[in-house]
Length: 276
Image 1 (cartoon, rainbow, N blue to C red):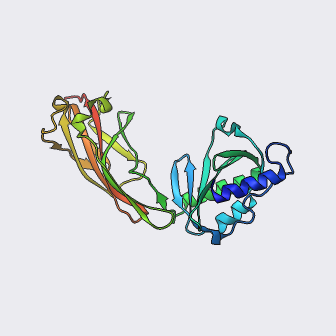
Image 2 (cartoon, helix red, strand yellow):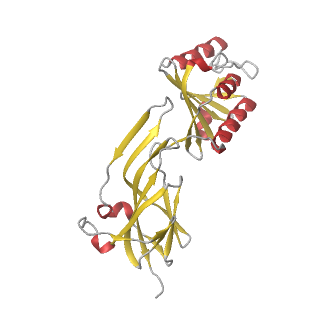
Image 3 (spheres, rainbow, N blue to C red):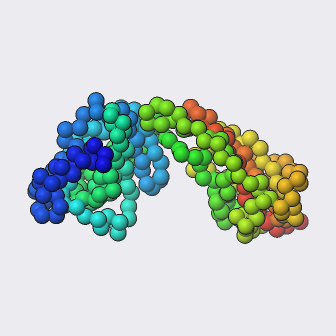
């Protein structure tokens, strides 16, 4: 069991946190926590499913020190709302996580009833961090791409990518992922997005620094990976569509200045029935 979790559970045992007491008998599981005990920290918000590096620990630790837990309560799984998860890497190498999911705190998977005000303060801190100009977002893999045309949207298929992300301890993790050719992905790309428009918009959850290329293949070439792709005109994040059924592939690039970056390929299938 992780060291910090054992500490929390020990406090729980002393104060009867197994459900034998009522409000007013709570405890502060992180009251004695100090910044010196933490080597790295991240904060994840769901939604919008973003993870942020915490570079200044003082405010976060002060907020954790104010958290109060009462009896164990697993019913947090029945609730819906925004969850804020703080992941701590301790100086001894152990890890622990605490999730604010008002009216609950979830410490390493164990749910507890909690006080509203300290939880709300932690939630507000996380959202302010997200909206800060200095926010360092950590992406485990390339952003999601949604393709929109004629008021219809579809999620593109993420293909081959090369990705780097900065970890909370300052190290860098590199991932190389391979994928079949788009023409070998008929089952994954069907059915097509049907549109009467001549263009489609590319909406990334994090905008790329560059669209490297856009190409397409007629859908008569399914499984023929030797077929040559045709270049597709694009402007910004809008692409021109060919009349008929085509499989499209986008190559996008992100710089690593913000803590993540790399190159990724996306594919999607569109049938455009355009007016002559």
